Every structure is written in C-alpha cells, then in structure tokens.
Image 1: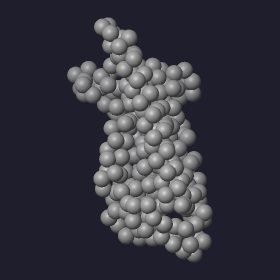
Image 2: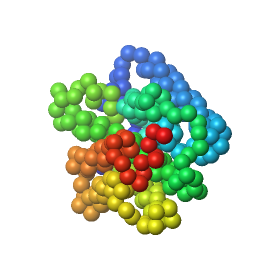
Image 3: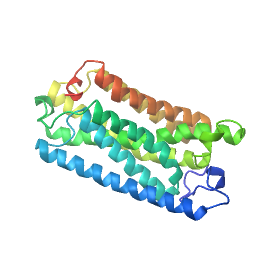
Image 4: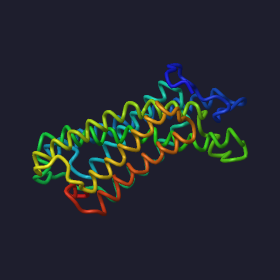
Length: 274
C-alpha cells in the first residue's frame, strides 16, 4: 500500500460496481445519494446552531448534543472521502452507524434545551469538548474503514468469504489508505483535546489528571491509536494486523462514549444525559 499516493481510487467492478447493465442509472443514483447526504448534513448543522440559540450557550453540554455533533462530523468526513477517494458505495457502511447514533440520540438521549451544570460553565467547554467530539466523529471513518478492510481482505483471499458484504465495499487497499490517512489527521487533534482537558481539570479540580474513568479510557484509546500509527511507521505493519489495532481503537471509543458516560460515575458524570 502506498500511503503517500494522492491519486483517488474509485470503486470499480471489484468493489461491487456493475461491470455491465445500467452504469448510467447507478451513477445517477450514487450522485443523488451524495446530494441527499449533503442536504442532511446541512440540516444537521442548522439544528446544532439552532440548539445553541435555544440554550444561549455552546451546544455541547450533554450526551444529546455531543452525539449530534459527532454524527455531523462523521458525515462530513465521509463526504470528504468521497471527493478524495471516489468511494460512494462505502457510504452505506459509514452512514449506518451514523443513523443508529442519530436514532438513539433522538429517542433515548434527547434532553430539552437548558443551561449546563455549573462545572461546564467555562470557556474550556468550547475548546476541550469541541475538539474531543470532533476527533471522535473523525475516528468513526477509519474505524469503519478498518472493519471493512478485514472483510474485504478476507474476500480477496477467498471470494467465497463474506461475498455479499464485500461486494458493497471498495478495494482493501483503498480502505487501508482511508483508515491510515484519517487516523493521521485525527490523532493529533485527539491529543490536543486531551491536553486541553487536563488544563481544564487543573483549574476546576486542582489536578491535571485524576484517573477518572473517562480520562483513563481516553488514555487507553490514545495509546491504541498511537500504537496503530507507530506500528505502521516503524514495524511496517500493514494489512490485517494494522486494521485490527485500528478497529480496537474504534471499539474503545464507542465504549467510552456509551458505557463510561452512562454507567460509571466519576468527575465527568455531569456530561451524561442531563
């Protein structure tokens, strides 16, 4: 895999595109799907802005608002990937978890517009929470891409394995490139978000690090993603081994979002449903 190649890799017949039949029809459907996704992203952005006006504060003060922003960023990242790599058919894989998150957000996590609790009434909310939630949204793309890589790679070795699922995926090399490049961009942002959180913690709680459950799992997640990039850069790990590490990082991120926020108690407990 050439990680530095800037040439977009479009989906071809090996990635599930029709080799014959009605390519024009599939092309129109694909363009329409992307256009509708852009429209949905704009509506989502408008809802985030309106939430801010309704609450008279930065709209990232609880689980509902956090997930709303994560899904918006994730969709934006996929649209960028479509323009750069030509992977429209990968959209179903990315948008499925986004739709699941949005459904849970509307049905389970919705909270009425209200001021945030006193611990969150700080300019650090704008800096720390925005950066962390943005990095979480970005990291959804490489997580799904790495999972798709494992399926697609297995199918390329044995066409009988995961044939139906793999037919809806780009080539394994393309998925590997998407995962790697997106993680390279997201990890520094995630790192900066953790650093900002430590500074905020020192001013709010008198300590840069308290081994709070959310802090601890965030650190574990950072180590996993750092190991992914380090293993590729120094040990030359590519393919399945690298994809497994990246998928693990995504799983830890999901665990931190749901289990830590909703089940455990700690210094970050006020960032849950209320």
